[in-house]
Every structure is written in C-alpha cells, then in structure tokens.
Length: 315
Image (tube, rainbow, N blue to C red; front, side):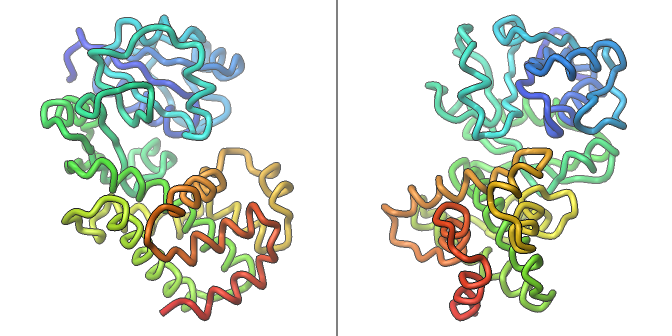
C-alpha cells in the first residue's frame, strides 16, 4: 500500500485517466481527480464509474476526491499526473494558478517544469486492458531515480510490470510518432492492403522512428524495447487503437473531417502529424511515412494515390 500521507492529482477524465485513478485507488493512494465534464463528474461521485470512458470499471471512491476546480486538486498533491490528450494540455491547465514547483509531474510538457521533476509513463498498454486488469508492461522514464521509483510505486499492481529508462526525449517522441504510424496502418487496411504489406509498413515505421530519434537526440537506445517497438505494435494492430480507426475510416472513403467527427475519442495522430512535420523540417531525416500521413490529413491529398506512391519507398 502506498503511503496514505501522499496524494496524487490526476488531470483528465478519459480512458487513461480513469485507468490510472483505478490503479492508484487499488494501491491506497489518495487521489484528487480534476474532471471538467459535469456528466462524468456526477457519475463518478454518484455511481463510482465514468459514464463515458471505461464504463464497466468500478472505482473505489473512498480514496478519490473529485473536483472541477484544478487548483483544489493540485494544491496538496505531491505528484501531478497529466492524463489528458496532449493537444488539449493548454486548455486543461489554463485555469491552474497553483505552482507546480516541488511536485513530481508525470508526462508534463512545457510549463517551466525542471527536467528532473518530470517523469513519463508509457508502454504498449491500452487503457481498456489495464482497466480489466490484464497483464501490461509500463516504462517509467525520468532523469531522477528517486522520482522514477516514487512514480512506479503508485503504478505497481499484480497485473503491471514496470521497467525504467532515462531516455526522456526518445520515449516521448516515440509515443508521439507511433500514433502517426498507427494512422498509416489504418489507412492501408482501409484501402485494402493485406497483412503482408502491413507487416512491411510497420517494420519501416520502426526504422523511420529510429532515424528521427537519432537525428533529434543521438544516444544508445534499443528501439526494439517495449517502450518503442512494443508501443508501436499495439497501437498499430489493436482494435482499441483510435489512431488506427481514424486511418481506417479515411482509407474507406471518409473525408478527414467526417472521420474526425465520427470518432468518440481523440486520435492524437492527427495533431502529431503536424507537430512532427514541423520538428522534422529542421532535421536531416527522411520520413516518407509520416510525410504521407501529413499530406493526406492536412493537404487534402488522395489517400489511395499517396499510399500507392509510398509502396515504392519501402523496403
């Protein structure tokens, strides 16, 4: 059991936020949960369930304090977990006035957080399976060993295996890029390409990811580790993958806008494609797959034609 004197703040109310709150509550961690959605807030308080995400997961509300006031949630927390879609980080944190100095911040981007206070939790693990208690592997990433282990203790469960890494930049960008590549896989499947091609596509995605990471931040990393390749594989193949589903809809003929509107959850690959395009413009790295996805999403290029062109660039 985690020290009952400590408290975690969880920001966000989607699938991952719900799974994380479930894990923390099972470990006896006091959780302050910032929920902006009034319907979700009411359902957690009254029924011990999130009515929109992971609806079948029961939450131990004796350890959970919910609020729609972010300052109230963050004020007395020693650890703050950012569990919202990265595209909406600014929106979620806009009302925050409580300083984050002295707190361990998990999956933080910007906001003046010193690198040694930051940790990432990642790995090939869909929130749906974590919510069901299925065996999953997570990697806790950070520069400070004490901070990494403090975060890991909060996630330890019989169905969670934990490893550690110091590759903050590599793991973070791999987690962003795998969403783009899962979208590419969805496009291919939607267009009628078979398993043979999809296997080649994913192998090339892994190689492209490694080229980008080495161009951005060269270091001795093992791209085959679960935090990189494992996360790419599960996001590309799983039926739970929202990014794969977005690509699938576009490949089957939906416009990008109509496909986005049909999604019930945020597909971060859409936003990641533009982000990586911007960053890669200053690097010497060839990214034909990420470029193809960007052209389809943002330049109204024909998915069928662009994917056909891509087939000649893969090995």
